[in-house]
Image (cartoon, rainbow, N blue to C red; front, side, top):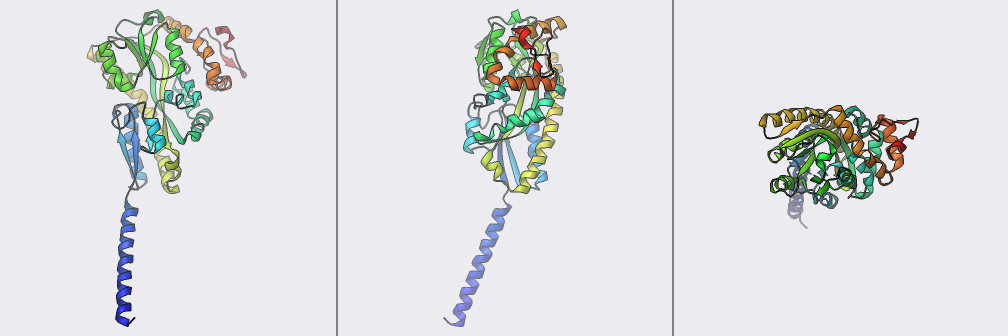
Length: 357
């Protein structure tokens, strides 16, 4: 091979290397795309927090990550999203805690127990403490990483007839999420539990397929359920929260620095989510009142106690399903009196729920 040929080979090789380097650089500059799906409106607490996370993720990673948020079941519905996450068709979800029992982790039904938390401070001792972390770790064998708990709010009952006592719900078909605890809760009120996807609730109420719901105020308002429910009683009998989760293989495959930046974004988003949840519920309650379409009733202390007494046996019946040790640990951590509306408390490592039996 003469010198001219050698030069030509060298130049061709140099050109190929330059092209390869340019392509590699272009590929390296492509952002990591995270599809983040959820089933409620974008301007609910969950929707706003998801958008906040997307913004902070882009800022903290300096554009290395692009989070695409799909709200209102536009990508996957209630029954589809968990499988989609496991398959890697979507990278992040923020499902309600009731979704995890059908997923195979029954301990999450703890959060469905009625009147378990006396206030947000008691709730956060669990979701932001060691109990919450241990629950998230139970998801890993399912190929899922638990990142955080986000609040929505405390649920209240709605219907087309007044609700002042447990007897007012007798015989009514009430929409619930898929949860054995929620089924037991509705049956304890002599009502009929109706498992249904959230996206189908408005139409079902409009057609009479169901008579009522249990929802945090923000969900009731943003889905315009107040248009098809004449009465809302502020029972605040249960908690609706979410767990932010990611596909385990995807999350652990991220570069360590990027994953760390996303963890910071998630921490900030959790603070934001929990702050706006109560604020938005309070604001939306006033908005519902102003529509004049739904009459809002505030229970007296005696009426609230009647609901607590009616629902207290649910704790006892679900003890073996959720785990007695876990329940007693929560009672001790929160000082909750919810396990017995008659006034029994968990103290000194012994949970005195026998008075409810």
